[in-house]
Length: 307
Image (cartoon, rainbow, N blue to C red):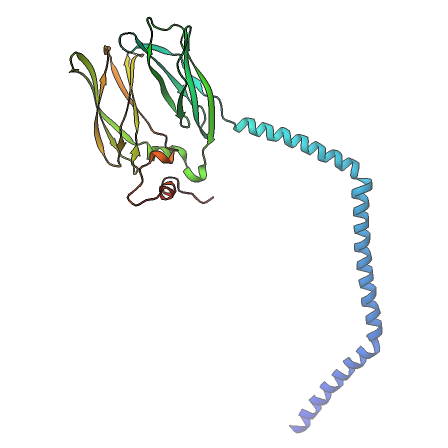
């Protein structure tokens, strides 16, 4: 057993000796080979860099400059085309109806359409006719909305003729879908106001006056300051009367009975339509919860969603 161990140790020693001897005999040669390889690789890198610089600044510079210029021009054309394709389209207006608002007074009514799915707008408008124009008024319109626009109480001896509406200024606001997600669902969650029991009648206040009554229930999770309601009276397909009322507030889950007196002669109608108006993009229309700060309200109403 001892002789076997000695023989194995002698073999290992001889192998190590041969390796060390080979390294000593060839060390200088290996060093020269390593230096040569380094010089070769370094030379190739330097030549490539020199060629790239020469090609970039001498040989290909004119053609590349031309291509960059073309890309800039084509890029501007593409950007312009994209901007045009995604820009907000103009608001659309219908014909204006002039209505009697009582003795010596007249109201104007039309509808405005926002043809854009991704934009809402603040705007100003006037009603014009052959003898003048109303004072400038302000309004807003939500994405894809068709809404009434009115002006009340013009005093005149005769009904204005040739009336139309002029949108005098528009401020567009793009819908941030990272906040709203699917906009129709987001809007429906905030405009779920149920209008019921709409009826017409009269009241005696020294003279017979018309009266519109309806119930409104707030089925949203939000409480609102000053929601507005338009009352549109139609006979057949013709608008014969308009009115507007604003509540002080309407809390989530609350039901209110609303009574609107119709000063002046109330026309005979076949349909009464009640249209709510709330700017759901304006954080100031939302009533804060008890103890809630304005920042808390904004965060609750407009939750930031992950991209």
